[in-house]
Length: 66
Length: 396
Image (cartoon, rainbow over all chains, first blue to last red; front, side, top):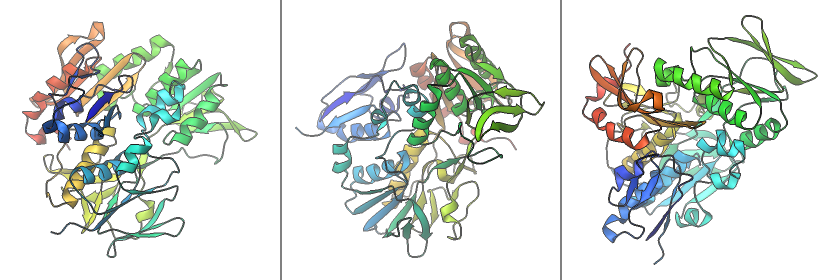
């Protein structure tokens, strides 16, 4: 799994951080998403898929092909 | 309870797509059909009043998913064919084109219809903003307009006023409240928002009632206020709220009362669920029915519905949350700033226009608001989790 985030789309809701705190964080100054791990280990995949789906700005994109 | 062999979702926006995605994420392998009233693939609505209206994004950029991601869902999307009737007992949805689609479970996610003002129908230059096509039409007219009036001082009206102003249009925002979004933000922050609009040059007509739209030769030319004053405009945007899109469910036997009335599991009847703006469900923490018109609820509730279809039997009890972007302000609100709640700044400073405020009502924290401090506001949200849920109930 490879994750890309669209900083311009990000609205700073932080839903992704609540769901997958090991993979996502937010910038202190404006709350925009910070990708901590673009290719997380298998154990995080379920949470990352949920984070991508519930992101209220559709700012998280996943590439599941290896 | 057995897992249904098929699910049909009426609605292809955030809640409809969210239901389909959550079902697949939770391992559902049955047949999945998503019905969309509009011809467009699922798109996001919050950018319509901002980036899409301003033209900084193409409409394609507001799409919720890529074509590949939609294909990977293995769901059949039937677009441009609105649901027109539901047979609750048979669990079938009939569409405008005459299709009949059966689902072992049916999810209602048909969203909202904008309210309009009484007056002559079909007056050119009068707009609402709900769909992508609405946004395109409004943008086309604002590009050549000198003056626009936005009627409605809620989140949508305030966002449209800010965007139209940045497009070089002289904008007047009209509404009944003492400040824009006073109901959602509380008086202090709403006043700050009013100041922000004024500084940028938006004219505010607050505490004003709209009497009628005025027109000439089939085209709008102004808005007449309750006191008789006429605000001239080539374009008028009506953003006076919306009603749940439930007309197609009349006579279905479902309880319709400001939305599809559901239990704590977002279930309207056996095998029939509702999610998103259209759903009025029994919030188990509040002990009262609640309907939320916001983007995060659409996906969170659709995930709850997907879980309950699959037998999770989990009541849906979210903390309400919304955000708005206007000029350089990004405002995030967790919980509900109840009328009469006392506001305290807990981080940053109002003078810096960077702060987090906590709202207390009857000694309990009922809301946390961030103004240009989203991360810090989310951290303070913990204070809400510590409160018993009934703290958020609107006092009767």
